[in-house]
Image (cartoon, rainbow over all chains, first blue to last red; front, side, top):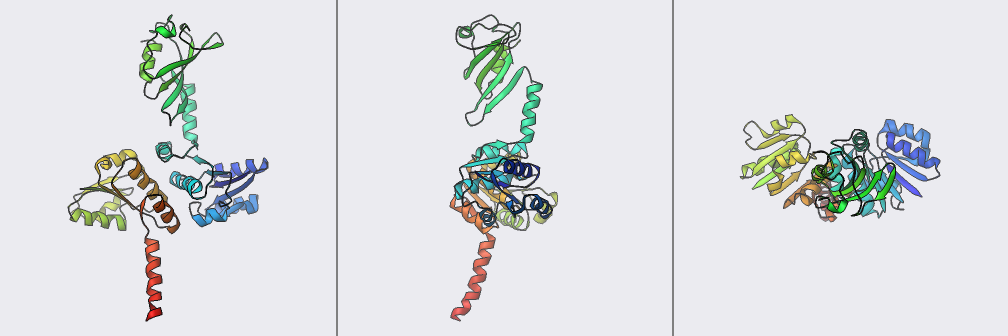
Length: 220
Length: 136
């Protein structure tokens, strides 16, 4: 496997080290002189100096081969977008992975069809949400393109659905229950499944329907 | 007619002033508040301080009703991304983007973005001026 990494900051440098140790061929592009010197001392000819959004720099780094994977890991989101677009569309690279520095820029990556993306801030936020659920609902997975999400919640005592079968619960349009975990045992939810307070439920729903779902599964 | 100019430097401010003079409703966006001085004391168009990647700010500037967006910040890649968003998400009828690097300029213009590349223009003019000697 041949991997091209743009951006030799902490992310890019550590990736290069890990992949190289695992026996993968890696080329790293870094623009800043002070970083390049350090990286070159460690990775030698594997590092190319230059702006990874310039075609000739990408070409010198071997993008025409093309690599199996390009990782755009610079500290600049616009640069990462352009690197991914060039790699995929100009050089026919199959797989790109982009780092997002400012989570507010996620919209831009989504809109321009750049995925998968990795955002440290976004991931930590998701963990915070998981540890400190907001209003009883934990976001497990977001299928952004499909506009769907999978959430987990625990059925409250006194909620509208307590003691009812799933088929008798008026779930919001665009929401389905996936599974129910009770006393450590999981079962796939179907119309016959009876809901009890304390049940841990996984649900899939269209984004934006969280409030409607809460009304039915949680305490008013 | 409504135009938004993102990046109010030497080029952006002149574009804004000329459009404004010919009757356009112009709003400029720049990260630097001082850029307003380039528009002169009598500027009556809009001016917003912030980053051109800020969707909220673009909406505030009126991108949803804009007839034209001119993107002339000092970053090629910012310009490319803002231009694509203006064209693809907000469907602004005329989006014109300045890109200094001829390589990226060519790639993105083939991809359907309207690009002005001053570097290519300068190269062409310079070579043309020298080569004019061949027939002199």
